[in-house]
Image (cartoon, rainbow, N blue to C red; front, side, top):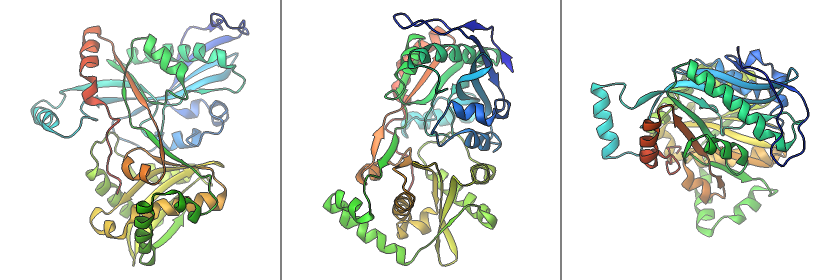
Length: 392
């Protein structure tokens, strides 16, 4: 572990005096070095907790190196956040069009064009970038602890030779202190992919349907007739279906508008293995042929759709995306869950089906001020907030 020089709590101007406590910032290369209890104590109620991050770490996702930043007070972890290092192509979120085609042609000649070594807070495989704080930390000290966490992260990024430093999918509405500090330190913000969610504040599918518009309700009733042709199985392991699931994943990924990480078979199986009792996969068969699979994780309150993959040609006539939506709502109702978080991308139908969107932002800062000024100027071209992806 990289250890930063210790310090003591400093009071926030205008706040109550801070309690004394020795602060030490650390950067770990495996979440195992921190421990499940210590990590989860900073993320109470978080679905994507230690076990989820461990599954991601062990999935062998090409091009990514994992880091875990913590701040300790008197040897107790009081603040934490995951991070990753990777080569990052600036055109990852660029919309399809002439500019993207031109960049693609240049990259065929110069593969490293517009690719920088990135150190980024957050995870490429979780819904949002969340800084965790121990419940004993008072609100007025969170900004102080996040500043120390950011100090350690930036110092580590420099030792790793990362020219671009970032923070992924920060929900400003829930973490204003993070946004304020990143802005003060010169990070530029661009729109990220919003998070779609639906409160399960209805007691039946009929009550839910009654809230939809007349046109949507009629369309859904027509689509749901496909349940007569489709067999749905909910399993907590993939068994011999994993190779077919990876075919469906590759098919879905090839249809997406933009791509970042490429998931592995170890990722899918690892989520189910590490999050036993809190994860499952829905399989959608027509006859004996598997046409779609939906990986989900949950706790006692929230169900998160991690990935829906489908055979685009054979699956679409059976309205499998919409069948998965209603299957997931029924799962929430049957188990008393109060929120369905349907992930990022493909927002048009999610909003039509009643979801709300929480905006996320990506923050970035280049170590070279001149390059940072240029990136600020062109950053609207790379905003991902309008990207819809391909989920159907």
